[in-house]
Amino acid sequence: MARFGKLLSRPVVISGAVVLTLLVGFGLYWFQPWKLVVDETVNESLPSAAPTAEPSPGTGTDQDSGDQDASATPAPPAEPRTLVSGELISHEHTTTGSVRVVETADGNRILRLENLDTSNGPDLHVWITDAPVIEGRGGWHVFDDGEYVNLGKLKGNKGSQNYELPDTVDLEQLTSVSIWCKRFAVSFGAAELKQA
Image (cartoon, rainbow, N blue to C red):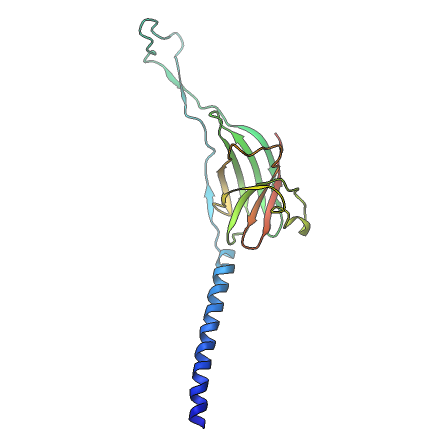
């Protein structure tokens, strides 16, 4: 009888260990707790247009051949123009930094996070949305209620980084930005975008 009890208990122990291992593995995958202590810093420079050739003073183009004078010097690239901007506020996690949308000389629009400092976390994305930016817990979950455009995964939880804005984004309709955790449907931080 005792031998039968030992045989019965061995499969129970093994199956219990397997279930526990699966639960721990799933918990580590889902919550990724190491991200609470590991920062990812990304510092990208603000994109600018390529320099354009500009004739040196006192020179010009050859009227007969149409060739430009060899002494032409490149003009400095045009600075990007800020269209809208805002300051990040904290939601689920303490978040600081600023957001602005700039237009480069070649017409591209870039959403730029500057001096971002937030917590790292699983499945963080940058969203531009039509939701209002509300302080406190009331603002944590509003960004997936209406229209939003996912600009991609957050490149790093610290630093300055650029995200291309699709041509379809209307800055009069989409007036806020959220650092959005897709896994838990919560905003880490957000900014209202206002005309520059």
